[in-house]
Image (cartoon, rainbow, N blue to C red; front, side, top):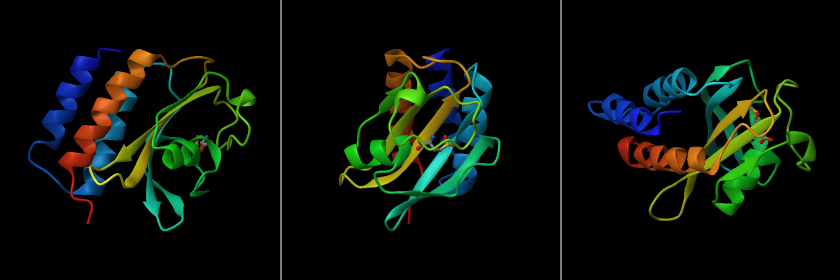
Length: 151
Ligand code: SME
């Protein structure tokens, strides 16, 4: 992945628009286009005690994820990126698509420490996601947190 290009294009998409849903829709499409070997890329947004499906690319997915459940709920509760090289080895993994083999989830945390949602990316290949991917996606997460209106 060309991380610098992805981040530059994300900045360009966010430049003249702060509306959350259209921005997340475009950013999921950008990730889908710029990263290879994916079968799902998108967002879950914090909604009370759960994460609710947001804009994404890929097959239809689970709509409700309880806080702390699955990879998404774990990343949200820990406020840390979670890389799962083999989803079959992750206790509590929520299989929305049985083709998924590895996954990365990056929490969207604002400067008050509130988790606004998560960025979830899945691959049908084991160990698809690296620490380098995590670094780029964490920068992307910060662009999203600061570049959109969350109210
Ligand atoms: N696998 C995720 C659920 C979301 S889908 O992958 C799109 C999880 O365990 O949280």
